[in-house]
Length: 220
Ligand code: 5RP
Image (cartoon, rainbow, N blue to C red):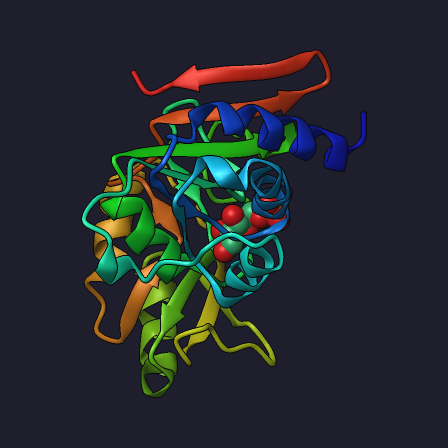
């Protein structure tokens, strides 16, 4: 099975978690794209979707799925999104596509976060994948210095701006043994909008695409 086929298998499995007649939160990235394509096939079952990025919004629209502004919905029963790295405890690094801030907002509002990923994303310790940090442009150098103090090597994501008009620093070389603590520490740096650690609000369920089938891991 190719990596894309594994992504497709979890996207298909995730349809089991949508709630009929409700608004669904939808993430960003290639795995989330497969999910949007599956959602398109059952679009009449849901009221619509809240997108975590402009790219996802475009794809949802192409499938004829009604888009909702997060401010206009009171409740979001479920949020479905991919991850760059995920642990057995369902803490994640996200933001490889740069949509981390909106993803974190929608994930926080949702009652249930279902993470969909192929088996290459499961890691014992987070940090091999560089941690994305969304930063207000004028704070770039200051935040970079603070990230060095925290043990990382920040690198500006070239020719990239987030949907919110900010820059992203990708921070290499972190071995993240306490993701909740680091998530809080990075968020407390002035100029940081969000960081890609999703540990305080981790996933509730992981659908992991493996060569022998989809493995379901629930938060303990
Ligand atoms: C985008 C994300 C994605 O969920 C993450 O990058 C995984 O992407 P993919 O499914 O393409 O591997 O956080 O900001």
